[in-house]
Length: 263
Image (cartoon, rainbow, N blue to C red; front, side):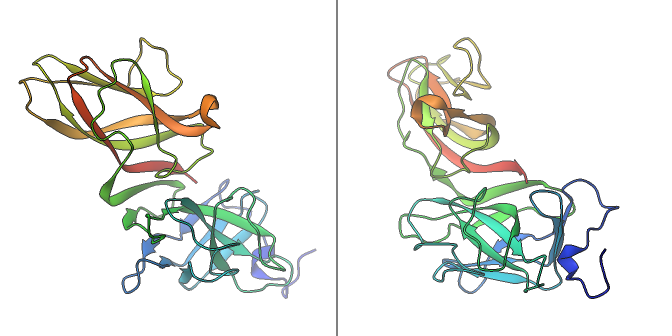
């Protein structure tokens, strides 16, 4: 039986919906955005939907430290996508905190902490600094992230005329079977009527999610399109999309502008 002295995270709020979340919005720290991540106050169910996690005050993650309110283990690495989690102690009532981890489904938790919930993801650049972006928040687990500047993939002047995989693992979360990704593209057709296609990596050769048609020879066509990235079993289950152009003289650049999550 629960008592009045039980830790707040141990007492379930049974009238709240399955895996609810309120608040806990993410943002780059205004003063030190390269290494600090701010998390607004909030409340949510833990990842097992068994306990409530509550923080009435904002939290801050420092990538230079290990443990609570830092990186779960090791040192911050370059060009990685880290899960951002909120952690709590439902037994002894230690203060709620937050962490980043490369294994958000199985993080290394501080002593005494046993529950957590993924809040989103943050990406490091080649200097191991947090890339800037904007995360939505509110009273829903359906959240979007947009980079301040679209981030280039390895395809910067692509001219593949057969479906070719594009690895997104350095820019979007891994382990999600179907992840809606906002792609920014820049397509230079060699001739009017040339086309550029994108699709999930596991789609059939005849299907496509996006088709862009050039109207004027060598005039760049650019814009944004949502493509569902899928896990490619042929490349260690990396999140990937396919692309192709209709002529080997075409050229396309593919960037990641952001993605949508259900946390």
